[in-house]
Image 1: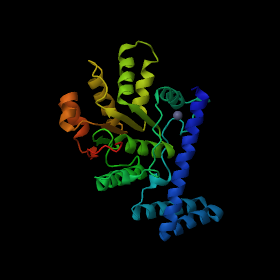
Image 2: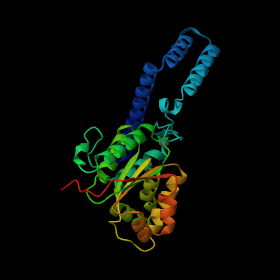
Image 3: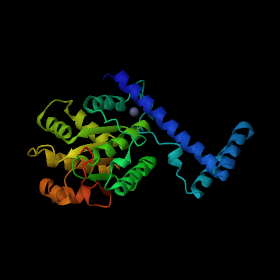
Image 4: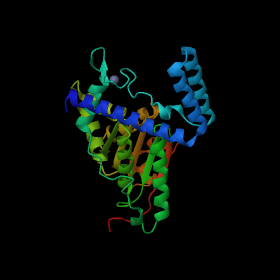
Length: 291
Ligand SMILES: [Zn+2]
């Protein structure tokens, strides 16, 4: 991928985010007559009011939004890149975010093509209710993203219980919303960390930075990678910690339960990353859907 294509991606994602926000606003206008009348007053003021009238009408609209318990950020999303406001251009050149995006695309794995719309929960014969709850929780998560209660999500279950399936639904939905999503197998993640750890190239930071910067990072099938000394545990901790500090979301899928995670990665990682209030654990049972 070159800079021009990375730039195009950033513009396309910006448009997608604006489209989603507009849809949400239209829906809110139809749902709340108070908001609709506040919006009409703003438009009237813009047509034939003074600047003061416009400011007043907008202030009133904001108050209505708050009084209704709605979130203004849903309707006018903040730019992902503060530097260029997601225009991709800063001081006449491609912005830093375009270069970062290019680095990300070079390590990104394709997201498995599962979506909420096409997910068939009747596959979960034994634990259909559990699956339905998990899917509902994650649908709400996507609708609220990035303003969610939990930043870390852990999907636990045996092989074939639909963890990767659910993580893919979330990743695809957020990508559709114009979010910067990175989907990596645990093996791939390990590989990126190893490259960073062992190379002295100036560009070595690009891959790891892309992992830290993505708005949603999925690490799929944690526990299937090999434990590399000074790399696997250390970088897992650092990457997720840094992402947590920046309020960025991470989904980890694994076959391991909490005590197995602790045995493999150590108490520090499990207590900091997976057992805090910032982490939501969804257990997806033991039945293998592929049988
Ligand atoms: Zn930028």
